[in-house]
Every structure is written in structure tokens, then in C-alpha cells.
Amino acid sequence: MKRTPLLFFTLLVFACCALAQTVDSPKWANESHTQKEERMAWWSHDRFGMFIHWGLYAVPARHEWVQNREQLSTEAYRGRYFDQFNPDLYDPKEWAAQAKKAGMKYVVITARHHEGFSLWDTKHSDYKAPNTPASRDLLKPFVEAFRNEGLKIGFYFSLIDWYHPDFIIDRVHPLRNDKAARDENGNKDMGRFRQFLKNQLTELLTDYGKIDLLFFDFSYPGEDGKGHEDWDSEGLLELTRKLQPGILVNDRLDLNDKTWGWDYITPEQFMPKAWPERDGVQVPWETCQTFSGSWGYHRDENTWKSANQLIAMLIEVVSKGGNLLLNVGPTGRGNFDDRATDRLDAIGQWMKYNNRSIYGCTAAPEEFVKPDNCLLTYNPDTKRLYVHLLQWPFKTLYLPNFKGKVKYAQFLHDGSEVKYTSRSSAEAGGHTTVTAGENDLIVDIPVVKPNVEIPVIELILE
Ligand code: GLC
Image (cartoon, rainbow, N blue to C red; front, top):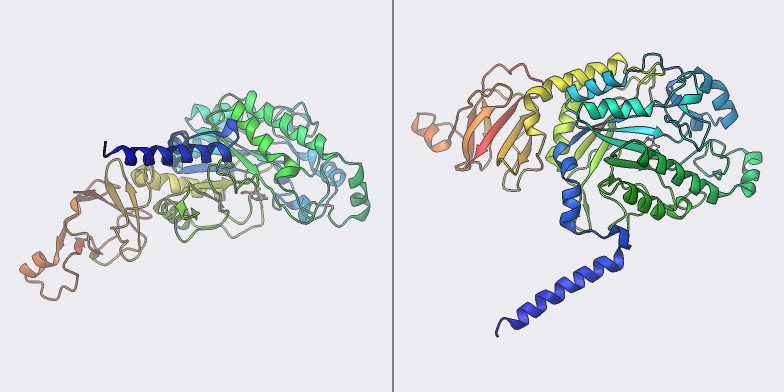
């Protein structure tokens, strides 16, 4: 009898939560937190994907926004590059093999970028790969090749379209400064454009088998911009979920104030200081990053990150509970250039021996504070903690307050034992100048750094 008020209260809380959820979400978006976690489980486990930006812009090779930067009309841009798009070296099996070797577990390709050019044989536009010298659907063999290598498939789908005749010219359009072009805005019908988006999306989500992820890009509400109503973001999301019920969707539809409007957030070319939060709660996140400063192939862009920086970036992202989507911009001939290949190879070399500190891993529990010049990741299933040594210490690594928490330590790359002690035993052994804290672990490190870009010590916890 006494438990009745508590039971009543608990039921009330549950009912309120359920109600809040239903009020907030449209019917098609109703999903519990656990269901969402399950839907996203593969992605949270895999941590590392390949982004691919490929379109007509690979031909001018001056950034995928070249049409915009140079303020080219559709006629000028199409006139110049459409007939030059001839990817004679295109071999998606080779791309897929390189992605797999680098340790990437999923791929996201620009099915259509802002320029409006479609890589597939869409029925809703003539501005597509089959009408160029490529003369075929480039997406079909791509999807097949990556799937055969066991990678999950994602499509990047641009909301923006600088080619479509009904797309109203706004502040991010190539012709934003062209008065005559702007005067035509009155004759355009965004309703037809919204239908075009849905038609294309339907093709992509119907004709290519199971699609695991959709990367919409992007909304820019406000003065002379476009927001969720212009795209009918809600309708696009509903259609996406209906056609591919298990799919993951990013956060660029301008539905971020709705709990059901996105699955994960996408900081771009940016490393958050800590695991990002919304309303005080840590959220799934993925940073997308380029090798250099451009997404599309950019011949003369020379700020390429080193292999070491890229590997460290992957580790840092996982140490903050996130994913890394690392971009390649294939050339107009359809291959990865050697700067990209070099880096993918180096990442693959590291991943081959160290991927246990990435897959299935996340931020370390708070009680483990990272040692100097190190990054920590943690696998909650195996209860192993990974110490990544960004800088090689001289003979000794101090693990602050780790005493009593570690059962065994080994290098990940070769499984060799790493010995450690604590202050009391070091002092007992005659080392009276030990300055470590009582609860620190003192790890013995060989003087010479092993031949590994970033060595990792695996700690099997008590
Ligand atoms: C941006 C850019 C774009 C790139 C994308 C990648 O929104 O417009 O060129 O495709 O980010 O995240």
C-alpha cells in the first residue's frame, strides 16, 4: 500500500515523457532514445568514414565552389566544363579498396553538389554524368564497389542547386550580384524545385539498395537566404525515413530545434574542445575534414595536413566521443591524386595495427585524466583504455591516479608487455628521487620510439 504514491508518481513521469515525445514529434518520427541508439549503433562503433566530393568542379580543379567564387552563370559553367568531364581512370573498386585499407568503415559521396550536376542517371535533369563523355551512371558501380568491400553507404545530397531554373537566386548564389538574373526571380517557382528535390531523393533512396546515411547540405535561413520552409525540410526528412527506415540523417536541414530533426551534428573543418552538448546533454557528432583546404579536387591548394596530423585528429575525435569523416576529392580523370593516396596509405598502416583503439571506442571515463602529451580512448565493452603517445617521452610515462586500476599493459602495435610500477615500489627499489604522486603509475618506456606514427599503450583495466 505504501508504495502506491511512488508507483503513481513514476507512471505519471513516464506518461508525461511519452506525451512530450508525441507532442514534439510527428507520427513518422516517433522513436525512443534506445531505438535511436540502436539505429545509430554501427556508426557510433565504426567512427571513421570517407567523404568523397566529386563533380564537374574536379575539372577546373579550383574548389567545389568555383562557380560561386567566380560568379559564373549556369551557361558559362556548363558550357565550359560539362563536355570536359571525362573520368577515364574512374575505378570505384580501387577507391573502395583504398578506403577499406585506410580503415574507413563507411563512405559518403556527393550524389549532387551545389552546382546541380548529378552523378547518377536521374530522370529529373539532363545535367548528369550519363550526358557527359563519362556516358554512364557513375553512382551504381560506386555503390556496388563500396558495398562489396563491406563499407556502409551514404549519399551527400545538396539542398542548394545553382543549375535548376526554379531555384531562386539568393545571397549564396553565383549570380547574387547579377541584377538581370535577380529580376527573373519573380518567374521562378520554388514549389517545382521542392518537388524536384523530392523526386531526386526518391530515386537515390529507391534505386540503390540499402542506403545507410544521408548528408543534406545545407540551409541558410534569414535575409536573402533559404530555410527549412524553402526546402520543405520536414517533407524531405519524412520521405527519407519512409524510403529508408534505418537511415541516419545529419543536422543540416534547419530542423535543429526539433529532437527528431537530426541524428548527429556535423562540425565542419573544426575540432570541438570537448564532446559537444545540446541542452547540457552530450550528442552524437561527426566532424568532416579535408586533407587540404578544399573538398573538391584543388590542384594548387597546398595546405595538406600531414599523416601524423590526420591520425592524431582521428584519435582526438574518438577521445571526445565523435566520428571523423575524412574527405578525398578525386581528379577530373577519376582517380585519387598521390597526395591523397600517400595519406590514406599512412593512415591505413597505422590503423592496421592500432584500430582497436578506434573501433568501438569513445571518451575515457572521467576518473582517467589524460597524461601529458597523450590522448585517451576507451572501449566500454572490453574495458580497455588506450593511451596514445603524441610525443615520445624519455623512458618514463606518468599516469596520474591510475594506481590500482590497471591489470596489465601492452603496446598495441606488437602486443609486447609494457612494465609499470608505482612510487612506493620505485622507492623500495632505491629510487629516492621519484616525484610521482602516491597514486600515479610509473610506466617504463623504451628509449627508442617504435616505428609507429603514434604508438598506443593498451591498458587492461581491473
Ligand atoms: C559546406 C560546403 C561544401 C561542402 C560541405 C562539407 O557546406 O558548402 O562545399 O560540401 O560543407 O561539409
